[in-house]
Image: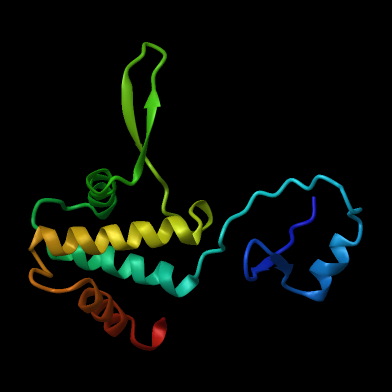
Length: 146
């Protein structure tokens, strides 16, 4: 199955992003039903910003000694999970993966904003800061590596 990238145009229009993508679409006939699984590709810089923010939050807390355990706990705190049901009917929380390939950009935007909100509300590092100030702080840490 070909993968085609589109650019969102006005209204509900999707325009193939490259000439190659336009060529792939020529196999489709007018009236064909086309099944599309849509996601917004991840942005590498934004992924690095999320990682830096997570690491700074970890380094400025005193309850956890393992970053993976902290990240798992944090995802539960900010609602980055789904609900599962065991065969016996027990309901449990399953944390979502934030790996680059496992989360699209729209989901990651929500995750990143939830991290910022938690970091401000937690008060251990960004108390009294605005979300924009926290984001600028992360940009400053990344410097030329973003």
